[in-house]
Amino acid sequence: MGGPETLGSVALERILDAGALAAVAALTSIGSRLAPSWLTQGSIVIAVSAITILGTVYLIGIAARRRPAARSVNAGSMFWRAWIGVRANPRAIAVSSALSAIAWCIDGITVLIIARALGIEFGWEVAMLIATGAALGAILPSAPAAIGTFHIAGTAVGVAMGLSTSTALAVVVLWHAATVVPLVVAGAISTPIVGIGMRDLRAATIRNATRSTGSGRPLPGVYP
Amino acid sequence: MFAAIVGAVMSGVSIWVLAGAVDLSTLGELLGGAELALVGAAIGTLTLSMIVRTVRWWTTSGHDLPTRHRPKPTSHCTCRLRNQHRCSDAPGRHCPWPYRVPPIPNGRT
Image (tube, rainbow over all chains, first blue to last red; front, side):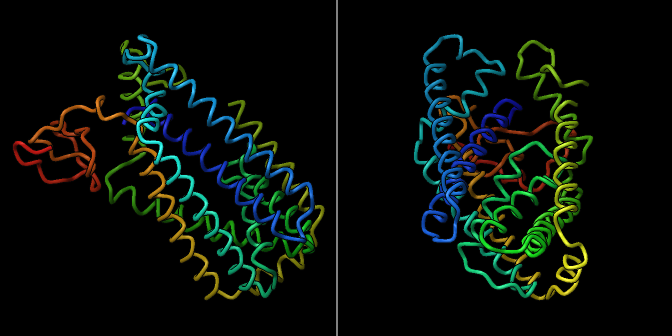
């Protein structure tokens, strides 16, 4: 898969994921009597924004397909093919969004288990809102693994749902550690097994970028 | 570079705000008393979540190219993702595990 195609599918997936995340947060906060109004309204705004962005880019993708220039092989057209491909099978959008919502619900269960591990009792809706609130906080620019922004957003939601600051932060810190550490370890173990190293990834990025432009030159920002 | 600086500043400010707002000794006590069996169960749940996310990625990226744009499969190709037509065979190049597939029999796609 070329660089622009990968970027197109990742961008599509991110928007679908953010939309599903905000939808889960909005539905949970509407269903919860504890949720403050700013949380409900904020998640509704994010969900509507994600759907609007998705619709707009989708329409641009359709327009790009109709233009002859878009059929040439360059970085832009390959990016849009990621979106046009979904047009060929819109069911992928529905399936992907549903899988996102399921994944976020599982994350809510993880938060609930972590809270029990710390001896803290709260309902499923609080766990769901902490999970989704922290994940929305991770959208902000931050250091790797969203350290800081993830925690402050999750803590703010926990406090809004009636927890003390220390309790909410303890849940978020342990949940984040339980999420990130196993992934980093699994990545470190699997990359040599699969036979991919940082040098290979860099070489593949440059190769794809050079191929994608069709000009023999790498994309801007990619240096050999 | 600019994004990295903004990210570092945002993370730093967030940590600074949290450090000033929480009782660190209470936080330490809570984290120190965590029941490890339940933390392990949470990691198990995370694995399930990752499996669902992997399927989602496959769902999204599997449709990123219309069928008519895909290259024709070749019968000799042994380095490609299952159900994908793009061939990654190259002389002397290592074929990593998920790409290693048996050749497609002649006449089949």
